[in-house]
Image (cartoon, rainbow, N blue to C red; front, side, top):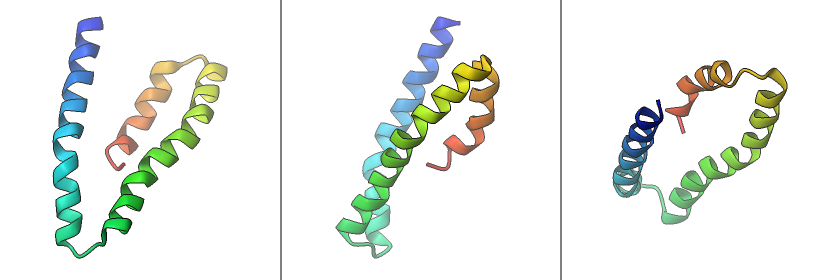
Amino acid sequence: MKSRLSAYYFLFFLAVGSSGPFLTLLLHARGLSTSKIGLILAAGALVGSIVQPFIGHLNDRLGRPRGLRHSRAPGSGTC
């Protein structure tokens, strides 16, 4: 199980890290200014840092980490 999770994290961050520079180029090609691109990219981190403690608290209260994790999975691709 641990090696499967490690492989998932490796592939996930490999995809995120390798697509990040191209996302900025795509947004710039669509006519967005550098300040708007910065705001868009910072919004995901800001929302994550605000929502994560509440999700953690809810997870602790429910005591069902897998159920909550699987319920968030579809939304994780939209950030």
